[in-house]
Image (spheres, rainbow, N blue to C red):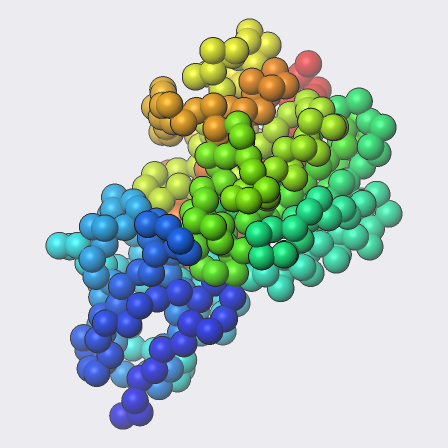
Length: 376
C-alpha cells in the first residue's frame, strides 16, 4: 500500500497530525485559530488512500470551542473539492470517528463545505460586471486583503438594506448564502429582485473576515479577534474589518440589517433579533414578529421553535453586530443562523446542511423581504 500523506497547504486548510502510520487508526487534532484559543474548524486532504479502509479519529474535542457541536455531527467529504457529501460519524469519549474506503487516491475532509477565497473574488467580479451594481473597497484587513462591499440598486433609494456575512470565517455557509442572494439580485429577469430594487438599495459584505477565512480559522481574524464582539468600539489595530464597515453604515443609514452565521450545536435555521436591547421598540417588535411569520410560510427550512434563549449574549450584547445596529438605527436587525450539522426538521442524510441549501436560503430571503414590504 502507498504511504498515506496529509496536505493542508491550500486556502483554509487546517489540521494537526497525531498518528499516520496505520490506515485503520489515523489520529488528528484541530488547530487553534490564529492568535486565539478558539478551535473547531478543520479541512485537510489525505493522499495515497485508494481502496484502503480508513478509520479516522479527531481527538481532544473536549477542548474545542463548542464540544456539543460534535454530537450527531457527520463529517463532510469530497473527492474533487467541489462535490461534498457526509460520512456517518460517531462522537464518544472526546473523539469524533468515521470510517471510509475511498474510491480515489485522494479525499478531502472538512468541518463544513468550504467557500474558497478564489470563489469570493469571482463572485465580486461577476457582480461588478452588472449594470445595477457598484463594487467598493471599504478598506483593507489586517493582512491587506480587500473588505469588499457590493452596492446593488440606486444609492438614492429611500430604504437601505445591509447584509454582512462570515464575521466568523469558518461559518462558510454564510457566504454560500450570500452567493445565492447576490445571484438573484443581479438577475434582471427575476421579478422579485426587480420589484425590490425599485425601493431598496442593498449594501452587501459577502466576507467580513478574509484573513481568517484564508488561515482556516473558525471565529477570529488574524489578530485573534472575534469580530462579532467589536461593534461598540472597533479599532484599526485589532478589527479594521468592523471599523470600515461600521463607518460606512453610519454614512448610509439603515432600514434593515441581516448578519449571516452558522451555529455549531443547533441543527436548525433560526434568527436572533434585538429583544434583549433596552432600546427595543414597538416598531422593531412588530417587524420581527411579521418577518418570522412570513419566513416560516415562504421557506420551511426556517423555524422559530428552536434558537437562542433570552439574554443569550449577556454582557456582550452591546458589542454584537445585530444588537448594535438595532440600537443605533431602530430598525429590523437579525442574526440569521444555519446549522453545521443538518436541518433536523428536513434532514438530508447524504449532504446534511450544505452550500447549495444555504444558497437557496439566501435567495428565499429576498422573497421574505418583498413580502414584508407588501405587508406594510
